[in-house]
Image (cartoon, rainbow, N blue to C red; front, side, top):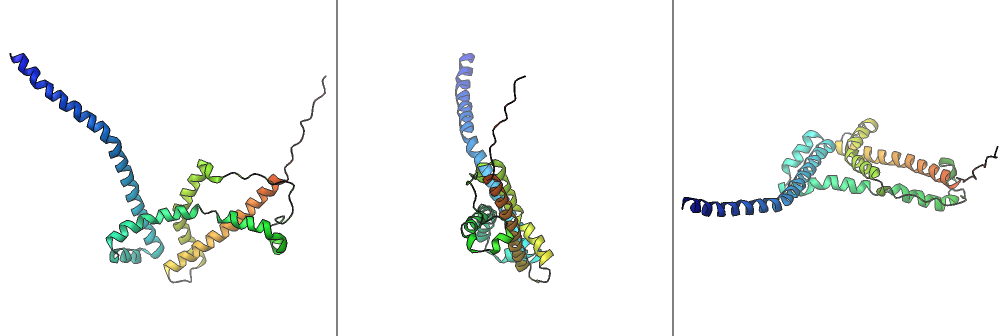
Length: 209
Protein backbone atom coordinates (compact mmCIF):
# COMPACT_ATOMS: atom_id res chain seq x y z
CA UNK A 1 0.00 0.00 0.00
CA UNK A 2 2.83 2.40 0.87
CA UNK A 3 4.54 1.53 -2.39
CA UNK A 4 1.42 2.36 -4.40
CA UNK A 5 1.10 5.74 -2.65
CA UNK A 6 4.76 6.50 -3.38
CA UNK A 7 4.30 5.74 -7.08
CA UNK A 8 1.14 7.82 -7.12
CA UNK A 9 3.03 10.81 -5.72
CA UNK A 10 6.10 10.38 -7.93
CA UNK A 11 4.03 10.26 -11.16
CA UNK A 12 2.78 13.90 -11.07
CA UNK A 13 6.17 15.15 -9.87
CA UNK A 14 7.96 13.58 -12.84
CA UNK A 15 5.32 14.97 -15.19
CA UNK A 16 5.75 18.49 -13.79
CA UNK A 17 9.54 18.25 -13.99
CA UNK A 18 9.38 17.00 -17.57
CA UNK A 19 6.98 19.79 -18.52
CA UNK A 20 9.23 22.40 -16.88
CA UNK A 21 12.26 21.01 -18.68
CA UNK A 22 10.51 21.24 -22.05
CA UNK A 23 9.31 24.77 -21.35
CA UNK A 24 12.80 25.87 -20.34
CA UNK A 25 14.30 24.28 -23.47
CA UNK A 26 11.85 26.17 -25.68
CA UNK A 27 12.22 29.47 -23.82
CA UNK A 28 16.03 29.51 -23.67
CA UNK A 29 16.58 30.49 -27.36
CA UNK A 30 14.16 33.41 -27.01
CA UNK A 31 15.76 34.47 -23.73
CA UNK A 32 19.22 34.29 -25.26
CA UNK A 33 18.07 36.34 -28.25
CA UNK A 34 16.52 38.92 -25.92
CA UNK A 35 19.68 39.15 -23.86
CA UNK A 36 21.77 39.52 -27.01
CA UNK A 37 19.54 42.25 -28.44
CA UNK A 38 19.44 44.04 -25.09
CA UNK A 39 23.22 43.89 -24.79
CA UNK A 40 23.67 45.30 -28.29
CA UNK A 41 21.11 48.03 -27.58
CA UNK A 42 22.73 49.18 -24.33
CA UNK A 43 26.15 49.00 -25.96
CA UNK A 44 24.86 51.29 -28.71
CA UNK A 45 23.38 53.64 -26.08
CA UNK A 46 26.70 53.79 -24.24
CA UNK A 47 28.64 54.36 -27.45
CA UNK A 48 26.25 57.13 -28.46
CA UNK A 49 26.64 58.87 -25.10
CA UNK A 50 30.44 58.61 -25.25
CA UNK A 51 30.39 59.96 -28.82
CA UNK A 52 28.27 62.96 -27.80
CA UNK A 53 30.66 63.80 -24.97
CA UNK A 54 33.65 63.32 -27.27
CA UNK A 55 32.29 65.47 -30.09
CA UNK A 56 30.65 68.26 -28.09
CA UNK A 57 32.93 68.14 -25.08
CA UNK A 58 32.72 66.21 -21.83
CA UNK A 59 31.02 68.88 -19.73
CA UNK A 60 28.86 70.22 -22.56
CA UNK A 61 27.82 66.71 -23.55
CA UNK A 62 26.74 65.87 -20.03
CA UNK A 63 24.72 69.09 -19.83
CA UNK A 64 23.01 68.37 -23.15
CA UNK A 65 22.07 64.83 -22.14
CA UNK A 66 20.85 65.96 -18.70
CA UNK A 67 18.53 68.54 -20.27
CA UNK A 68 17.28 66.21 -22.99
CA UNK A 69 14.18 64.04 -22.73
CA UNK A 70 15.06 60.50 -21.47
CA UNK A 71 12.87 58.95 -24.17
CA UNK A 72 14.71 60.95 -26.81
CA UNK A 73 18.04 59.74 -25.43
CA UNK A 74 16.92 56.10 -25.41
CA UNK A 75 15.89 56.41 -29.05
CA UNK A 76 18.47 58.87 -30.33
CA UNK A 77 21.69 57.62 -28.78
CA UNK A 78 21.55 54.10 -30.31
CA UNK A 79 21.02 55.61 -33.76
CA UNK A 80 24.45 57.27 -33.64
CA UNK A 81 26.48 54.08 -34.33
CA UNK A 82 23.84 52.92 -36.81
CA UNK A 83 24.10 56.16 -38.79
CA UNK A 84 27.89 56.01 -38.69
CA UNK A 85 27.87 52.49 -40.13
CA UNK A 86 25.33 53.41 -42.82
CA UNK A 87 27.36 56.48 -43.71
CA UNK A 88 30.51 54.40 -43.96
CA UNK A 89 28.77 52.07 -46.41
CA UNK A 90 28.17 54.94 -48.84
CA UNK A 91 31.04 54.53 -51.30
CA UNK A 92 31.08 58.08 -52.65
CA UNK A 93 34.65 57.67 -53.89
CA UNK A 94 33.49 55.14 -56.49
CA UNK A 95 30.85 57.53 -57.85
CA UNK A 96 33.36 60.38 -58.03
CA UNK A 97 35.93 58.18 -59.75
CA UNK A 98 33.34 56.90 -62.23
CA UNK A 99 32.28 60.44 -63.12
CA UNK A 100 35.89 61.58 -63.47
CA UNK A 101 36.70 58.67 -65.78
CA UNK A 102 33.74 59.63 -67.91
CA UNK A 103 34.33 63.39 -68.11
CA UNK A 104 38.07 63.63 -67.52
CA UNK A 105 38.78 64.38 -71.18
CA UNK A 106 36.96 67.70 -70.71
CA UNK A 107 38.90 68.59 -67.56
CA UNK A 108 42.62 68.59 -68.35
CA UNK A 109 43.57 69.48 -64.79
CA UNK A 110 42.57 65.98 -63.66
CA UNK A 111 45.32 64.44 -65.78
CA UNK A 112 47.93 66.35 -63.81
CA UNK A 113 46.43 65.29 -60.48
CA UNK A 114 45.61 61.70 -61.43
CA UNK A 115 47.92 60.59 -64.25
CA UNK A 116 46.26 58.44 -66.88
CA UNK A 117 42.73 58.98 -65.63
CA UNK A 118 41.52 60.16 -69.02
CA UNK A 119 43.56 57.81 -71.18
CA UNK A 120 41.71 55.06 -73.05
CA UNK A 121 42.24 51.57 -71.70
CA UNK A 122 42.44 48.36 -73.76
CA UNK A 123 39.81 46.64 -71.61
CA UNK A 124 37.60 47.33 -68.63
CA UNK A 125 38.57 45.13 -65.67
CA UNK A 126 35.91 43.66 -63.42
CA UNK A 127 35.77 45.22 -59.98
CA UNK A 128 34.79 43.00 -57.04
CA UNK A 129 32.05 43.96 -54.64
CA UNK A 130 33.76 44.99 -51.37
CA UNK A 131 30.80 43.88 -49.23
CA UNK A 132 31.24 40.31 -50.44
CA UNK A 133 34.42 40.07 -48.40
CA UNK A 134 34.03 39.61 -44.65
CA UNK A 135 37.28 41.47 -44.08
CA UNK A 136 35.85 44.55 -45.81
CA UNK A 137 32.70 44.29 -43.69
CA UNK A 138 34.77 44.32 -40.51
CA UNK A 139 36.76 47.27 -41.84
CA UNK A 140 33.53 49.16 -42.46
CA UNK A 141 32.37 48.45 -38.91
CA UNK A 142 35.66 49.41 -37.27
CA UNK A 143 36.13 52.47 -39.47
CA UNK A 144 32.64 53.74 -38.70
CA UNK A 145 33.00 53.33 -34.94
CA UNK A 146 36.47 54.92 -34.83
CA UNK A 147 35.49 57.85 -37.06
CA UNK A 148 34.35 60.24 -34.25
CA UNK A 149 37.66 59.77 -32.47
CA UNK A 150 39.63 60.40 -35.66
CA UNK A 151 37.50 63.46 -36.46
CA UNK A 152 38.16 64.84 -32.99
CA UNK A 153 41.93 64.31 -33.29
CA UNK A 154 42.14 65.79 -36.80
CA UNK A 155 40.02 68.74 -35.71
CA UNK A 156 42.34 69.49 -32.80
CA UNK A 157 45.41 69.22 -35.03
CA UNK A 158 44.19 71.16 -38.06
CA UNK A 159 41.61 73.55 -36.61
CA UNK A 160 42.91 74.38 -33.17
CA UNK A 161 41.93 78.04 -33.63
CA UNK A 162 38.22 77.12 -33.64
CA UNK A 163 36.78 77.50 -30.14
CA UNK A 164 33.67 75.34 -30.52
CA UNK A 165 34.33 71.62 -29.97
CA UNK A 166 31.44 70.66 -32.24
CA UNK A 167 32.56 72.86 -35.13
CA UNK A 168 36.16 71.73 -34.73
CA UNK A 169 35.13 68.08 -34.81
CA UNK A 170 32.90 68.59 -37.85
CA UNK A 171 35.70 70.35 -39.73
CA UNK A 172 38.12 67.62 -38.73
CA UNK A 173 35.75 64.94 -39.95
CA UNK A 174 35.23 66.69 -43.29
CA UNK A 175 38.97 67.18 -43.74
CA UNK A 176 39.71 63.55 -42.89
CA UNK A 177 37.04 62.23 -45.27
CA UNK A 178 38.25 64.51 -48.09
CA UNK A 179 41.93 63.64 -47.68
CA UNK A 180 41.27 59.93 -47.30
CA UNK A 181 38.89 59.99 -50.27
CA UNK A 182 41.50 61.68 -52.50
CA UNK A 183 44.13 59.07 -51.65
CA UNK A 184 41.60 56.28 -52.11
CA UNK A 185 40.55 57.59 -55.53
CA UNK A 186 44.18 57.79 -56.63
CA UNK A 187 44.94 54.28 -55.33
CA UNK A 188 41.88 52.76 -57.03
CA UNK A 189 42.69 54.50 -60.30
CA UNK A 190 46.21 53.10 -60.30
CA UNK A 191 44.85 49.62 -59.58
CA UNK A 192 42.31 50.07 -62.36
CA UNK A 193 45.01 51.05 -64.89
CA UNK A 194 47.27 48.22 -63.81
CA UNK A 195 44.50 45.65 -64.25
CA UNK A 196 43.37 47.21 -67.54
CA UNK A 197 46.87 46.92 -69.07
CA UNK A 198 47.53 43.46 -67.69
CA UNK A 199 48.44 40.93 -70.37
CA UNK A 200 48.39 37.15 -70.26
CA UNK A 201 51.53 35.72 -71.80
CA UNK A 202 51.88 32.24 -73.25
CA UNK A 203 53.77 29.78 -71.14
CA UNK A 204 57.14 29.15 -72.78
CA UNK A 205 57.46 25.53 -73.81
CA UNK A 206 60.73 23.91 -72.88
CA UNK A 207 62.52 21.90 -75.48
CA UNK A 208 62.78 18.22 -74.79
CA UNK A 209 66.26 17.03 -73.99
